[in-house]
Image (cartoon, rainbow, N blue to C red; front, side, top):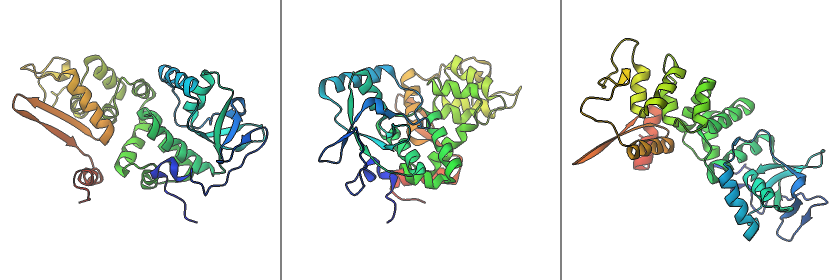
Length: 299
């Protein structure tokens, strides 16, 4: 039987045609859902998400306390240590524990280690955004451990090949830069621009200190030492461009949001009579992805 495409989401593997493997002391109901003591479940140490927002967990815990856990988590069969390993739903499991719940509904599935890794990534991408480094590391792990090509990963998680390829490049960033990307101080677009800089750590610190846009970061990354930054007046030494052309916080935030969604560098220039949105691509594959998104077909 052909393997279902993971890009369609968790539903692709949560169908009724999948065998359920329940074992005591868990209790199975008529819908194939197993009620498992929360202490008999363990998180996957290789799951992509490493950070969990405490405020979000508290909010979800309050909802679970009031309404119960409405959606079962997905776990593997009971291991020799007596615990079920979470495939998808660690955030819900953590919130349930915080809410004081003693048992949770679960679907028990026998899946390969590779499929488990892909499902964990799909679940995180669909339900709550990973930070760029968590996403990049997850792609890298699937690529290295299972020999998956960027196109294979893209098909599995429902992303474009260019997006996956760009994310994989982020894994080469120095640890100091990775840390500020993980903390949200730098966007994915900034991180991609910094990749080509002679001194990524120094440039990252400058971008944060001066609140530079992705386009300004790209110019600094490409500029040669001792020469002015192309297309900028005084930006290389920290002075604002002549004429007061700095962008407001809303415009910069919108640029970052678009960059995260598209996996491309985005520049927005807005004036009294309108403006322009510039998408910058590095490869023909990225151009092909832009055409596909805008026209519904590749070039």
